[in-house]
Image (tube, rainbow, N blue to C red):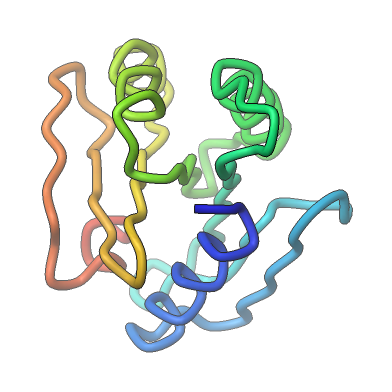
Length: 139
């Protein structure tokens, strides 16, 4: 799943669930790949997405996602990294989840056409397929 397709699937889902002020910035545009305002807490949501690349190298993609989301990191915002739901990307996310958990960064794995798995910021890697993604992100 390419980054553009992953962002489109997430944007459709999050808009349907009530995310306001939604902005999607695919590619090299300045800012988080997906940004919006959560409905209950009114906190900002920043999502950095990485997709499958023509030349592979998922590890470099994950490193870029981590660097980019840390640029937006703040205690007043909700941050997440979104990746395709593939064995390689899942393994990479599993390996860095303890560090992400310490920072309160969420994980999202997307499978076409619109299946989204949520990984809470906790040390145990426990993906779940929530009915409401925003409910899980807006806690």
